[in-house]
Image (cartoon, rainbow, N blue to C red; front, side):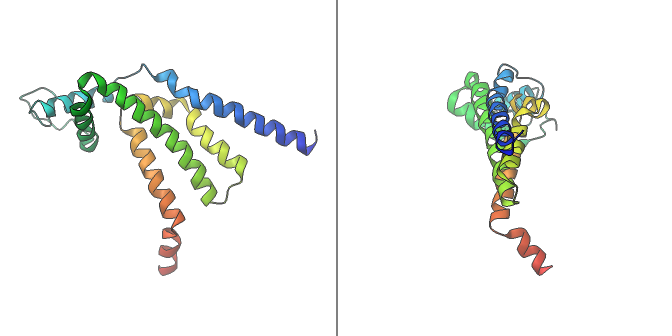
Length: 167
């Protein structure tokens, strides 16, 4: 196999994997359970005047992500209780795509070649466990995307190299 045809096959495989990766999160679109439901209950109870109470009148420490609960309460206030799961699904989907994009950018900042960056970015959309967690109505994909945005910014502004030079 010539090197040109090898490159063509690699790129074709990456395009196919990217197409599958872009639609893969939709497989989990109807899934909403576990911690995602717990966050919804805490947000609804917060708006009803029962902060940090899964069962109204019984304060507890079961909410593990107060920031996400506050975000959900804000969304709930804006779109109503019935619209929150759809808004969270959209936010989760955008977060998964942002994770892939940031993986691409961080790979570039680290000097990886185009095909390796693409493979790494696509892999983030093909890992079933990660995509499932990202689409289950929890804060995981949103917080991961925000961490990767921060890491990308830190790499591009030279924050790590400045810390190493001064240390």
